[in-house]
Each structure stands twice: as structure tokens, then as C-alpha cells.
Image (cartoon, rainbow, N blue to C red; front, side, top):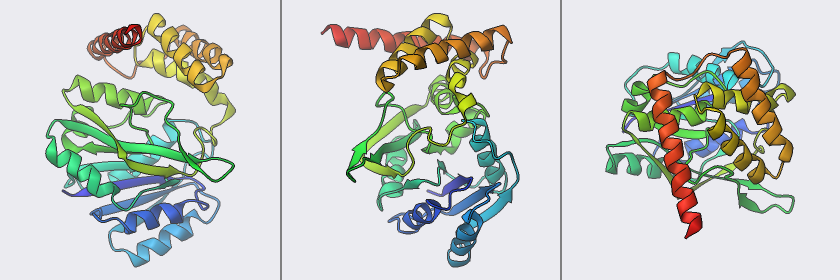
Length: 287
């Protein structure tokens, strides 16, 4: 299988070298890797140039955009810029953040999953982050079947069917919903642990706090499912105000109104799937 990797990188000088080194050490090497230096003001470009000169499967391009780190739109825009520089001869397409260290067998494990399951659409491992004592601890505040946006791999058929990634906050949730809408399966593998060097949301702009609710509106969750999802998020993060921010974002999007990321038919499928999952969890809890 031909694996293509796109790495959006904005001021990632502290992390990019480790990420690229972990790719070059893989037991299953990718066919192409492209680093998108997205308006960086540090040594990101220099690191990308060094690896491009040493490894023929690595390239880099420079892209000028805003230096405001808003969740979703900036990173997906940069990803799409990189994607436009690649041909379509891939089997698997991976979006990888520049602050991720892959274990040496990561790509081999991913390829094995897709090789053994033709219905598989998106696959990934689990993220570990370092605490103050230096211990690497699992940090996965979402459901166990959710693949973190920092290291998602798509089959070509799945990526094509869902029309690529949405340029908005919530892209790494709507992609999984649309994958299932088109009949593809998801897979997370605990045997593929990755090191995440920057905590979740550490670089996000303060304006981003309302975007989670806006994302739920744009995915056509509806108010009740949004309330449930916001409560769950606030509980897992142990931040009560996250519930208020989420609902505030939803209501703001509703009043604008914000355009939807999915069609009405896709929205119906998403709501049905969400209610099914909620029911399954309630049933499990009851037992």
C-alpha cells in the first residue's frame, strides 16, 4: 500500500524534527511525505529543508496564511494545500500533526488494519502526553472509537466518498460521521501508542471557546443532542464553564445562522447514529 502523509506545520520548530525522525525510522516507510510550512516565523522551514535534502520521499512547501491558530480551519487549509501538491496514486492518506512522535511500527500496524479490512475507512492509535513527573499517560477524552485529528489515516475510497475534510472546527468528528454514512468502519488500536508533545488545545486562540458549540450546530446535532454532548464534554474536562461556552456557541450559530457542514440527509443519519450511541451507553450503564 502506498501511504501519503501531509504535515501542516505552523511554528513547530520545537517538535517537527522529532516527528519527521519518527517517520524516517518506520518499519514501513511512506511513499510520500509533504510538510506544509504554514506562515512560520521560527526554524520550521529549516528543519523541513534539512529532512527534504536527506530523504527523497519528503518534500516541503511554504504557505502564507494567518498566524492566528484557530481550531479546524487553519490546519485543514494547510492540509489541503499540501494535498494539492500530491498525486492521487495513494492507497492511504494520513494527516499528521508536527508535534506527534510515532512508534517505529505505527505505519506497519496501520497498513495491516486496512489490508485486513476492506470496509475500514479511518484508523489511528491513541495519544499519550507527558505529565510533570515525566510519565507518558493516555490522554483520550473522547470515546474510545474516536481517532484523534492529530494522526488520522484514511483509505482513498473513504476520503473520496466524504469529499475530503471540512474546513471548520469539528472536522475530525464530522469526517468519522460521514465515513459511517458512506458505509465505512472506524478503528482505533491501543497497540499503536503515539506521543503527543503539546497538550490538547494549548495553541488555540481565546476566541475558539465558542467554536465547539458552533461545530455541533453545523453538524446538525440539534439542541438536545448538543446539550448532552456539552454536558459530557464538560464532565470529562472537569470544566463546568465548557458546557456554557458550548451552548453559547450553538445558540450564536443558530442566530446567525451558520451554514451547515453536512446535508439534511447526512444530518438525519448523524442524529440517528448519535441517539443510537447514547442509548447503547445508557443501556450499558444500567447493567
